[in-house]
Each structure stands twice: as C-alpha cells, then as structure tokens.
Image: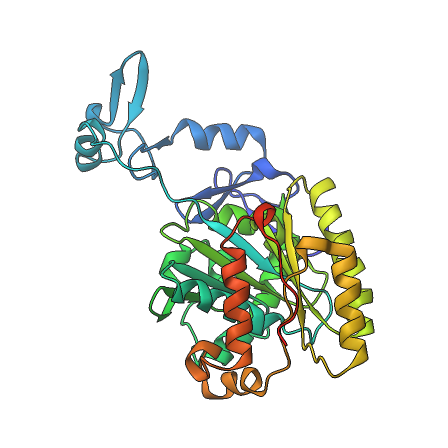
Amino acid sequence: MTGSTMTRCGTCTREFEVRFRYQTRDVSGSFAYACSHRCLQQQLASECVCEVCSSRFELEFPYQAVAQNGAQRYFCTEVCRARGLTPKAATPAPRRTRRIAVFNHKGGTGKTTTAISIAAGFAESGQKVLLIDADAQGNVGASLGIRGSKSLYHVLVHGMNAEDAVVPVRNNLDVLTSNETLAAAELHLAGLPNRHRVMRERLGARVSGYDVVVIDCAPALSLMNQNALVYADGLIVPVACDYLSLVGVKQVLKTVKNVRKLLNHDVQLLGVVPTFYDGRNKISADALEALRKHFGDRCFSPIRVNTKLKEAPSVKKTIFEHAPKSRGALDYQALVETMMTPVEAVVRKGAAA
C-alpha cells in the first residue's frame, strides 16, 4: 500500500501494516491500533465509553455502570455520572451548518480571493463563519496576515479538536490555517482506511457553533481535495473568463460526478463564479455567455476585474475592509447575498454595467 507505515498493536505490541478499517480506531483524539480481530476484542472488552464525555475507560467501580430502563449506562467519573443522571432541560435544535468548498483544478481563477471574500461577506452579514485553508501554499493566512500555531495538519494527523486550532481573525470570522506540512498530511491520509472521509470524520461533529464553513481548496486533483469535497455539502467553482478556464470546468464536473458515484457523497454544485470579467474584451463576453448557456441559474453574476482586489492581500485585509465601495467589494457582496437565497428561488442577473 502506497504511503503505509508500520504500526504497533496496542494489545500484543506486534508491529504490523494497517490494511483494514477495524485496525485503526479514534480514541479520545488519538489513534488506537489492533493487528487482529482477537486483539481488537480484547481492547474493547476492557473499555467502556462514557456517555457524557465520550472518553474510553476501564470499568473499576460499581458507580461507573448504571442499569436504567433495561439498558446499561456507563460513566467514567462521579462528575460525569451526576451530569448524566440529572434531567436535562430542553435545548433548541443545533444550527444547520452550511459547508461550502471553493474549488477548481486550474490555478489563477481567483479561488482564494473568492473563498476569503465569501467567508468575510457572510461574517459581515452577522453569521458565524469558519474559513478552512486546505491548500499547502497557505495563501489564506498570508492574505489575512495570520499564522496559527496549529493547523489543519494537526487536526487531520494528530486528531486535535479543530476548535482548539482555529484563529479568530475578525468579528464572526475564524480561520483554520495550513502550511507546507499539509503535504505530509496527505501522505498520512493515503495510508489510512477510508482515506477519503478523514476530514469529514475529524471536522464533522467536532466543528459546532458556525453558520457557514468555507473551504479553500488547492488547484489540483488530490486526495486532500477529495476529502474537502466529501466534507462539503455544496461547491462553488470560480472560473476565469478565458478559454482555458472554460476547458477546465469540464474536469471539475467530472470530479463532482466521481465524488457522488464512487465516494457516495452527494455534494451539490451551488454555482460557477465568472472571475476577472472585463466587459471591454470579447473573450470575457463569450466566456460569460458560454457559462450562462451551460449552467443557467447556477451561473452567478461575474466578478469584474478590479485593482483593489489585487491590493487587499498586500495590506492583509479583506476587500470589504480595504475598499468597501470598490467594484470588487460590491460584486462579492452581491454574490454572498445571492448565496443566502435558496438556489431554486434565485433568478440571477447579468453583469453590472
């Protein structure tokens, strides 16, 4: 198996190569390994899972096991037992978090600018947003002038809770940064069972309290991007208004089809975003017409060529902070407003004059 490494069994201490999903378990944020079903059964026989804090523990005291309504309940400490047996007040249903991947195989389409601007736009509207940099180049952090002490690498490889690794950067906006170590994380993922779903398993239930999660993907067909698409519910595709970018859209659509069919995850194409639109150039007009003809209502209004958009990263600001009245800010603000409306009910307008 490419990228596999030798691992030590937690029961018999024998070294072995992970080949099956049951051989690796997530135990309180770290990995536990079993070389065989027999060793796995021995591990599970000596462990119970606390229903309050989800910690695994060895049953030692009578208070740790409670028979109630015909079922056995387990608590690791007296504190957890008291919490678990205390009647809970009714709580409101958890908020539904939108997970949006910004993705294109081709570079130079304004992908990171779009991801940052969408995240900042949602945050400006009062929604709580997490922006995840899933690109080893770390352009999100460079654009906003931040560098987290922990990164997406620590979440995927070491099992760190994502909320302990995020960096609050603006009101309502947190960022989970990345750097060159993300390449090593991808090698690690390649050796794991169910390797396409690690990001979803690591981030899904552990990321709470956000209205929107935006993932900035690398311009590549990679295992990391497959993880991002399986984690995401919806997909935004920035497409530069030139011929080669139009050709690249076909590969994106093929990837989405494969994610649905082969990885069994129904990620939805929310729409394509025409970027670098220049109404003075025929190629821009032709590209926009082609996108509208093919995608219909899923072709968003274009983002016009704007010097302020290029300047914003150099001063470590979002476009809404750097030039809130610029064409770039107005276009991305319109995009965010459109995305707040269900796709089925939207009639998207053409380019601004």
